[in-house]
Image (tube, rainbow, N blue to C red; front, top):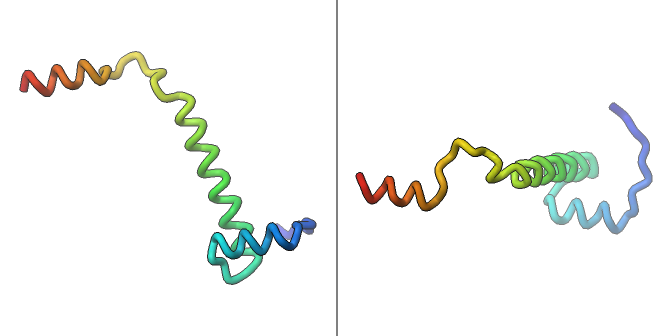
Amino acid sequence: MKTTVDIPDDELADAMRFTKAATKREAIVTAIVEFNRRRRMAELTRRAGTCVDLMTVDELRAARRRN
């Protein structure tokens, strides 16, 4: 999909440098993919520890000692 966006030159230059992208499009797509990946990870992190059916660290250690 084509979209016209006004991106500050210095920010785009940094994105190209950080991503080692050869084109502006590659830098933008890489930045969007990375942003989405980080948001997904943050969402998973917020849910960490919410499953009551999993063993605690202490229970896991005790089970390992028994075996």
